[in-house]
Length: 154
Image (cartoon, rainbow, N blue to C red; front, side, top):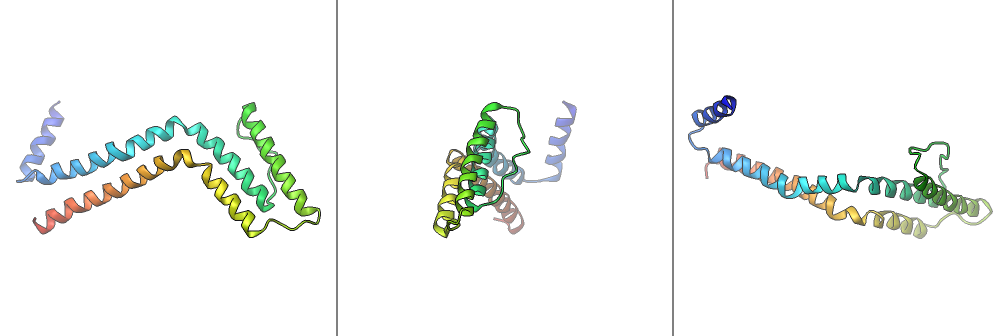
């Protein structure tokens, strides 16, 4: 407890006006508690869903572009994940065999549609990522404002 009191006394001795410290604490604390921390908690709660979506969209994207899938590597022993990988690999093989059987490779429109599908798969996490990025932006703006006001005297 003596250390915390010593830090408080040190801050009081160094700064005549503690408004700078309070503004800095408010800028960091408000953006972290309001935006960044809830985003981190949400992402950590649904991290497994995010990893499944990543593997699904990766296989879909690679299949549409004709990129060979590496079927020898498997990150988890979970049978549900393996079944999803098999379904995506089957879809990718179908697309690849269509292009190998003399059909035209996927058109630009088909590739764009595949990218849109891959992006829409992450819609559960859009708000989470948006709030996290917004929180970091507001944190930087708040700290900048505190230092600008401190050095330019407002």
